[in-house]
Length: 146
Ligand SMILES: [Zn+2]
Image (cartoon, rainbow, N blue to C red; front, side, top):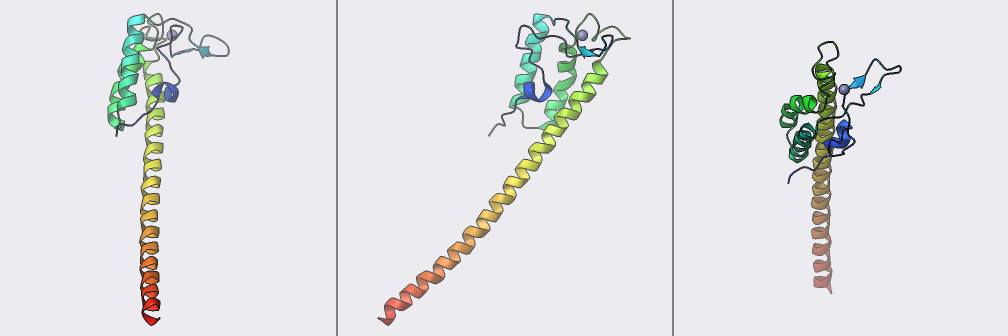
């Protein structure tokens, strides 16, 4: 079964939204705030496709491989993608990579919790079945006695 995640929520970006702005931080602003520069529509479309692909994936490394492209498509060309002194590609990539890894750690933890629960339920079921067998046996013996 394909996993269903929402990397738009996980990363806090929504390039499908026409008012989507650069994922970088305007550090010249005091206090620093989210950059308000628009992202060209073709970059937003590529970012949307990448996010859809990440949502469909159930493999951590596959989603990490898509990140560099996603980062560069969601940073503004005016400052945060291209100007060497303002470039935030490395910074945003590191942040998102850690966020994506944390997400997969959680997913793994959840699934091992689930398989442990399943194993425990099977044990309980086995125990109940052997108890039932004992009860059935005794019932038969009772009937035999009458
Ligand atoms: Zn920007």
